[in-house]
Length: 398
Ligand code: SF4
Ligand code: SF4
Image (cartoon, rainbow, N blue to C red; front, side, top):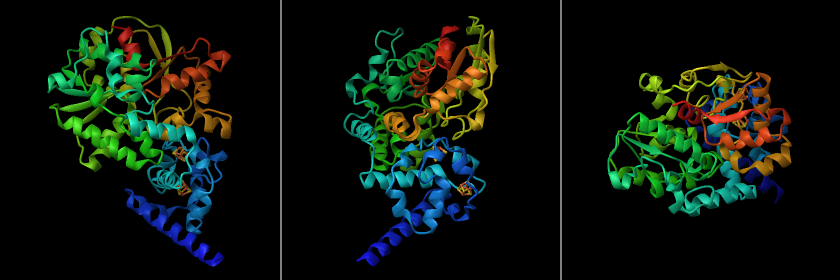
């Protein structure tokens, strides 16, 4: 009996290892040299029972069952720092970590707060569990009116708004700022409103591939109803899904993050940005804009458009940026992370902004305003530090 259990475990381990080869460049996992750089760079590697390099060692020893028996892999916030640093170019985040989370989801080993986000996404099409009918409410009262694709049928660009920019009261301010900028630039655009659902990218990275595919299918069907030449979004997670993952499902459109879209119009924007802002600003590179998609300079170029701005870099910048903690399901695992780590990466990031004596921590991702503002409230030295999206700073400078 004991022997058959051991044989079963070994077979499961081998089959899981084999399944990693199906991920793009997945076979590279065979080339791991056990240098432990991945585990060292991981913000929570020191707290994981099995950090990434150690996971690979256990897979080689056919001991995947040991990995499944722990829950500390949920500390992984899919920040891509391990993938970027790996000298063997092993797709650790997209392969090893995400596939392991998928197995944990199948085994029902999911922290309850993450399970709630999955259920909300399934039932309501957004992680907050809000009514789909209210998805366009953030746009009410704005003049000129935010155009809906259902009325327009065609537009130059389709703005994919996303969950947090639609529903979160703090983040909706960023959406209103973007609407203002699109209006002054005379852009012909439309939004899907209640026809849009969550992009699903963070749910996918948290192990819910089936849910991701269901959400992508709904969005793909909504896109197909209208004519437009590209999609724009304020959310690096939506950008990543639309650019890199939806095409695998046959949903393929040109897509830009707002920083790329506005940077292409910088000559038109420059004379409109008139208000001086005498401030020392530091910019936080979001993982899914910078490290994953290599967009580093466009956000900085937009910030330096504002007269009076002095741009300074934190110790972790560009490719070494420190995750805000919200990716890969981290946004819905705050309680779990606190219980395991008694620390939040967002609080470390606030310290870094204070170290360079910044007045403003500039951001470009909807996960970040709530996370960094909460973290700043925990630090008495950060009372004067302002957290603002680049869109808010630009709209205020008009
Ligand atoms: S960084 Fe790459 S090569 Fe080094 S231990 Fe991690 S997976 Fe292996
Ligand atoms: S993706 Fe980030 S959090 Fe996850 S294992 Fe890699 S370094 Fe750690």
